[in-house]
Image (cartoon, rainbow, N blue to C red; front, side, top):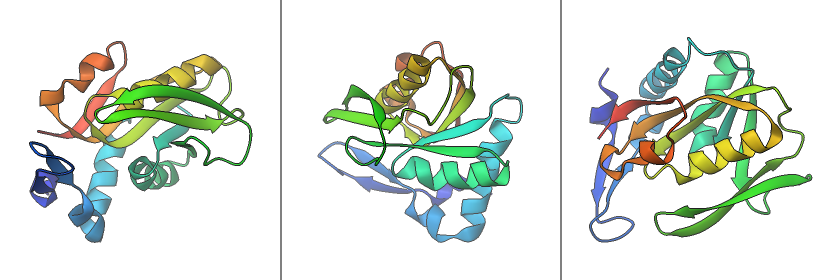
Length: 170
């Protein structure tokens, strides 16, 4: 199945000159969604890791089913102020401003190996911030996987030194 044909392009969203890659047609179709999840899993079969991390909200959409299918725990990485327990945080730049992400201080431990899953690699800012949080704890990022990569934005440059994988490239 060619997942790329299932992604809707929306021109000039969220601002003029931007083409938004809409994954909701994949989410709506259970067969497509299963194929996307299976392809993410196939992309990490060579990796050693114990946990899957995913940023809200679309990292949850793909990270949770991947973690369930491969019997690994899932760690949510959220926007500041959304987690109920003690957190560690990292602020970073986005395409359209700044953001802060957080995860629980006890979510991962020193020496853990993790993978990060998200829907889209644009500039790489969110993934880099997550990777830095992981390393701050003393854990290791085995790889970072995206369903979609926007190659023209050169997000891989921001993630140099990490094993970056993507399923669909534009």
